[in-house]
Length: 266
Image (cartoon, rainbow, N blue to C red):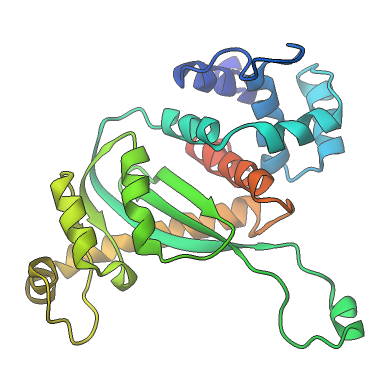
């Protein structure tokens, strides 16, 4: 494999572009640099390995010798702000003419059908992890995203994601679930024009009335790109997550977004 295409060099350059120090932690021994820990966690997601197999992969391909519990502790202790900054560092453009927003879910590892039969449970067990993200329609990249253990209204997540987006968005496409006058007004104040079809019997709000009468459907149907990227993300890295805690689940899913944006896909 060519040097510029090796994953370890990509992660090292990405870590420097994000402006992080060699070691994120202040206390404790400085044995492994933080980008090495991120490399191990991304390798684990790309190749769908366990922590022990990821440890062997790093030893055989990159000559990095570390214990598998080091990766396990890193997934729990590395802050969410670090993963969000690494995802933002994959975006090297300052202007996005057309973006789309939507949400999806990642199912957790559920118990077997034999166990469900033994406990006389008919319905499903478990609650999926909610993901809300912004996608560049033309470049097919994830601009920003966040994960939540409990479901919440997706429209209320958009202002926070818009602030974390490293690129300024001109037009944002959303589905009918994001039809809210306060959201249209907030996006307009922050330099983004939102396009979202209105719900039935829409009567209030100047922005909603504009969408009801003058929506550009040819432009709106470009929103399907965000569904395509969600499908590609689940087909490449799986639609389930193995982690139990929301901190490790966040690290696991952010590694998938980063690997997709840098083009490291199998």
